[in-house]
Length: 253
Image (cartoon, rainbow, N blue to C red; front, side, top):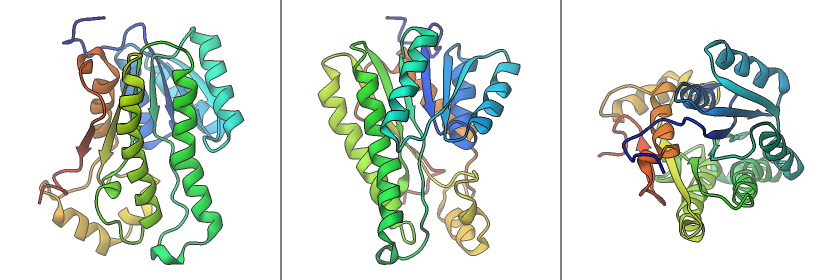
């Protein structure tokens, strides 16, 4: 084990899902800057290739893999390719998520409900299963949300899945801690990404969210990345089962 003061990721390989843009790309870029080999996963090859080229042009070591995290075979293939390229996976960031429905919770149709569960809950669990099957120590970072910690009007099922991710984080921290795998979560508030565009573009909602924030603004993807790198690194070697909230103080009232 490196010094616990070391937040570097040298000689580590990290898989980041949902990595073609937004928070996932910011985390992957920061991990590469910290010395990691990064494996980028996203649904579309052209999107993940563009993200990989951005990291590669900055000097990072990167592999791009098209993988739909709601597809069990695709998740298995992602890990097979990562291990074939870099030998093993030391860190996993479960960032991929979907939110196909925006509206009252009781109005969601079964298809949208199932898709949200498939990607946001089953996908991370499948990835963790493959990560743990290596039989080696490592660190898992699940990207949850403050929507999983509070009421989430108009995003009820999305919030429900993020609450499940937080619960999954706590349970797996206990179940995997004995083999040296740490499991933590990061819970962002509103961050300016394409995923959150419906909220960012709605002036009334944006004003309400920012007024509730202690910092009176929403976040940027890069402001989430540092916490993920810390959790992936040996600097957080005694931390597991925890959720770090990064929301500009929105939940601090």
